[in-house]
Image (tube, rainbow, N blue to C red):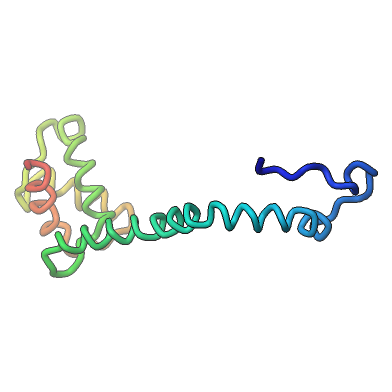
Length: 130
């Protein structure tokens, strides 16, 4: 049983405070901690370890260099998906042309710097082709 039996305070309709509740349930909480503490500790250790393990795994795949601008790459990727409807043909990896002009116009309108957009287009295009 996890929940304690009603205390005499509850049965006498006295005011229940956090302090009285803490005092009334302390022995039960202590017993549960002793009985199931190893499970709780294992659970909390796993909750901490899992994100760290994922991060370490992702870091091991990192080839180095300056990190890419994730927002810029995402916008270019989404523009490449929408290119047939917007410019009438598939997106190309060329650094000039209608798709490059579209990317430049949209990203600048979104407040992103114009520098580096033409270099990001081929990288995103190669990533889409894989």
